[in-house]
Image (cartoon, rainbow, N blue to C red; front, side):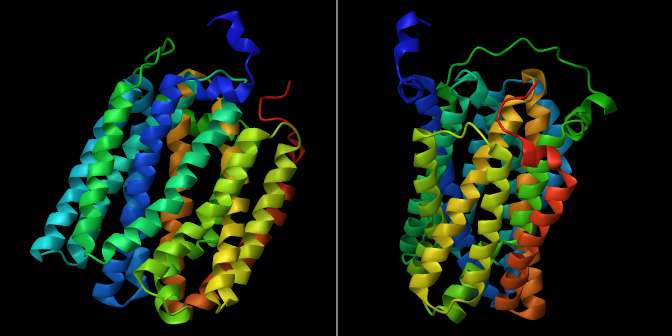
Length: 412
């Protein structure tokens, strides 16, 4: 790297990195596909069943493979070419989504087959996430990594704004249309990942054993700051999973259609994008632990307001606030995990982190669907928002190291 490069502002250094830009393109394509798939599957299975419980089963079908495969996925990501693993998994997901398109078009797709295919797509996604997370530190240096994480998060949020709205509009032409476009996006993402060139760090290539399989869990347990950040995000999103019930809110409470559902799904991403761009310009440098706890409290408050809102406009606003608060947690957690983990452990640690993310998102959807079936959608979301704030107060006591954490890098 030439000396002149160090004279550039950090943002310019990151955005002049060709392979980082290709990484962003792949992330946008994959995220677009994920958001469009969520809209189509959620609307289709709710239309088939009229039961919020099946929305929860969709989340469970995505979570189970991630939970069951976590240890294997992490070891694979640390032993083999991460780029090729991610590329192959995106191809498999693309084929699975195109199968949903074919089933919808030909008329044989039912709720059971949707859940089975979503489970298989979830299995491929479980193998994709840790290698993709572990690729990023090899594309930028430690100094610019927080900026790269913010840009990566911003790219995801851009896709999260466009994806649901586009999915809702395309659904007007039928679910098969949404699934077909989603499949093409996943295949395009795999092509982008295949073009990334990265010099892998030397690896010890540990033999497969129980200690090596559980090394990621052992490492996280030995790092109170990382464990606190991951578990806080887990329980906050697990309890505050309002987005899983958006199809119910769209139809029964806010009285809108697929396009309105797409806008509701896009709203959190709009708030998240604004904060992501802010963090890309002004990265977090101090008081990261206190910032994370504060953001999660705002996440809980926004969830409570959304629960009781009957106004479409107000719901959009509080969902945007929810997304803005969440992105602070995302950037802090991702940076802490990657910057405080040795490269030879990143696959296994990222796999455990992905399992926690999957638990908070997919299992959170199941929890929301289950509690909505028991108590109704509004009480379910309200309980989740209150529970999120309670978790923050408990975690401040359980993880004082996280509360006191000043920087993203390991403090000596």
